[in-house]
Image (cartoon, rainbow, N blue to C red; front, side, top):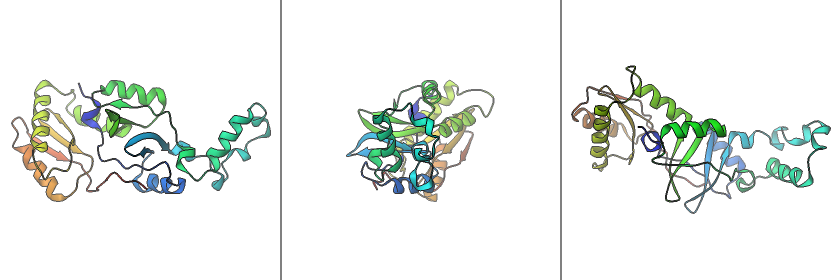
Length: 231
């Protein structure tokens, strides 16, 4: 059974609560993210998504342009909170605080259910209160594509092979990915995600090829470093 830790992205870009909304918009556009976690002193305190930035006064999509009857049924507190969200330049004022999360051992079926029920595109992965990765809809699609390439899910032999590759990678100092994204199907190894250098790509391929049970290796990783940053 595949779990969140098997497909999650571990190199996560984050922002701080005192970051500006403009800076967050730049991050979303630059990295083509649908959302970015908000981290304060190592703790996840919220997220800012594309949906949080859809209605902004700067582009004329705030509540001031809604029909007059829309506000008749709204109480003052709701209207004030909405004004703050649509006009504030501070991340703390616009972020979503009630963040759905999963753990590393959450089955992918539960992750998929959560993404669908909450209508979100990604979910943070937590370990003892610390965020260690993110699972997005794209990660699930890539896992599906890799594991069903031969018309069947991961088998027990493939699970053993994958475990051997992961253990071998973790033992190497040159491997920057502490928990790389990879899947094994019918002896075929597929890497995806990001990596630090072409040398690491080649070394990863050689390592995987030397593991018993591996028939071929495909590497779809992009050479972009995503350090955890605070704006």
